[in-house]
Structure formats: C-alpha cells, structure tokens
Length: 441
Ligand code: HAM
Image 1 (spheres, rainbow, N blue to C red):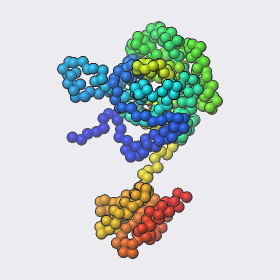
Image 2: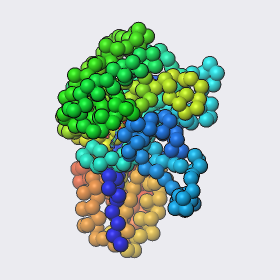
Image 3: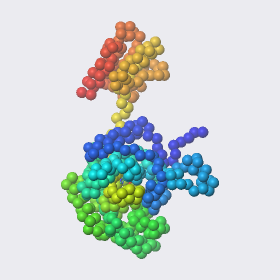
Image 4: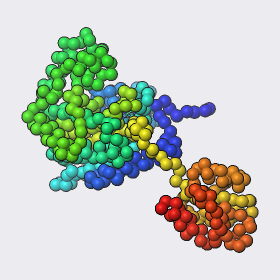
C-alpha cells in the first residue's frame, strides 16, 4: 500500500517546520512582552464544548467538525446506542473555547487576580473544501486574555497582533486591519431581528442557505461567499447604526487607543466573523494581494459571554488567532526571506575508513561543546562529502585523515574563503568557535 497525506493536510517538511518554529518563537517573544504565558490544551475536546462555545449554527461547528470515536464508542453507535457527553469528542476547530474551558476548570483567575493572559500554538482541524490557503489541518498562533473588561485591553490586543506581523517582517502597507463592533445582549437581538426581516424581504435574491440562516442565525448571511448574496447583504442595515450607548462608547474608546498607538484600521460594519461567541469589538487582518479569497491571516475579538456558555462565572474575554499557513504565504508574497536553511555549523569529513573512530570522537566533542555538527554515514568519497557540505552551506568543515592524525592534527577548512589550516585535535572546539566568530564578525 502506498499512502498519502490525507486531503487538506500538509507535511511540514524541514524548511516549513523551521518556519513554524520561528514564527511560534517570534509570537512567544512578542506576546510575552505583553504578559502572556504559554498554555497547551488537548487536540480534542467534548463536542459539547464547541457546540455551546462556538455555536451550533456556525459553519465551523455545524458543518466542519471532525468527530472522534474510540473503538468502543464506534461499536456502541453501530449497535444503535447513544453516546454519553464525555464519549462525544471532536478535534478542536480553534483554540479559544478550549482555553476558556481550561481557565474555568483549573480556576486560573484567582480572586482579584484578573486578567490571565495565555498564548498557544498548534494544529486546528476543520473539514472544509481544501483550496489555496484553506486546509483541513492548519496551524494557529493564538492569544486569549480573560478577565479584562476595559476597551484599553481590546486595543492592547490589536496592537500586539500588529506588532507580531511587523516583527515577522510583513510590511504594514501590505495588510488591512478591519474593525467592527458586534454589539452585546442589549442591542444585538434587535439588530439580528432587523437582519432576519431584511433577509425575508430579499429572499428571492438570496441563496437557499442564507434563507435558512434567517431562521437559525441571520448574521451568518454576511459571511456567505455567493457573490449575489454578498451584493444583497452589502445593502443590509449596519450594526454601527444599531449599537446601544455602552457598545458605542466601548467601540469609540478602542478606536481612540488605536489612534494613539498609530494603528491604521478600516471600519467594516459587515465584519461579523464566523464564530458566534463574539460581543463588542471584532477585527480581522487581511492581506491586500496574493492570497485570493482566503486573505484573512488573523482575526479575533471580544467574547464576554463565552465563559458562561461553557459553564463558568461571568468573565469577560478577548483574543485572536493567526493562521500560520496564510501568514507564510503573505510573507512570501511580500518577498520576506523566512528560512535561512539548515543550521548545521560543522561538517566532519572522513578521508578514509581507518579514521571512522576518530571522526566519531571529534563529532562528540563538537556536539558536547554545543555546535551542530554532522558527518557522512554512507562511505562517500572525500570529494562528495565536501560537495555535500557546500550544498548544505555549512560554514566550516573538519577533514580527518590518517596522515594528519599521526601528528595529532586535523584540517579545518573555512567554506567561505576555502582557506585550510592544520589544527591540533584537542583544540578543535576552540578553533571552530574562533572561525565561526570571524565569519559572523
Ligand atoms: P478564525 O478567524 O476562525 O478565528 O481563524 C483565525 C485564522 O486561522 C484565520 O484568520 C486564518 O488565517 C486561519 N484559518 C482559519 N481556518 C483556516 C483553514 N481552514 N485553513 C488555513 N487557515 C485557516 C478563530 O479561530 C478564533 N479562535 C480567533 C479568536 C481567538 N477569537 C478570539 N480569540
């Protein structure tokens, strides 16, 4: 049998895996300057968490979840039995609901200790139709802040997100930050009703799905990709005209802070995001060129009701997630060099079979001294070993041959200048350090 990676998944080969580590590291460095700490939650959760947290009527939960069955649960289903809540499991389609669940379960916000700021990096799973920038397993870098009510927290989060993209080298001019307020329980129900009425009034020009959405979750009609529906929804009532005083003040204050921070944004009253937990501020970072319809590289917002939806005490929250694969595409489109290749520092070349033991020992001393070093394990000729080291752009090569070894020496070759020198075997780590030092000076 010759198997392939499942549809909509990719292998992160060494270059992509190095980039994933680099972007995760950059995220940790940037977010920790804002007080964020790492958290890791399971890859799967009880399905109910996503149903109650993200919303049953969202595409993510209603259509795109991968459910997980243990063998035992599978057999129960085949026998026509019902599964208990803790047997109904799904792969996480996003990280927010899991982080909020973990904060509640472990009581991570001690009395008077809010907010708690958490960041994560990992795979998410959505069974969407795969296309450029849209995968079934993709990687997100996320941040969640629980327990902060002030609009300054919304602005801080957005500033942090934009700082991350800047630190990765993405020019500010290549992205647009879209901003909106989704209102809250005081003003959204009436707005939702006005959209339901609008859908009914325009039902002939909207697709079947949007007409269905009028009953289940009318705001989702703004997300419809059908161009005809898009044109109709463009003319729908705007949430910005329906916000209550509290929501308007919150939103205006967020914008004031963003102005102070020098962050450009475009207000988009039709930005509703695809998850039901949002209240107040929502935002999305879209790339201007090169990504087609999958141009959102990150997004998030406030979710002041999510903690209650997953069984906790009222706790405001807000966060965002960045899509790794799309961010890489955006960086590539902007001409940012991401992967500087392998980080091998020393290649130890074997002149012939008689010196294999010494090569083994030299390698060990180099690695013990903290260098990344490698050698040939396939009895290649010296010429091909040097060619290989050149191709891998290793900055220095140690040539170990029987003749030099007689006088306790090896040859150190600077791969940039091709200058060679004989050095004492016991000086290898120091000489290598000195050569690498002159190369980077
Ligand atoms: P989201 O907008 O669904 O938000 O996903 C965030 C980012 O993940 C998107 O902007 C996109 O870059 C990437 N992404 C989403 N789906 C796919 C896919 N199928 N293939 C490739 N990349 C994808 C959330 O997930 C929220 N949890 C964000 C959040 C955190 N809101 C509050 N806190």
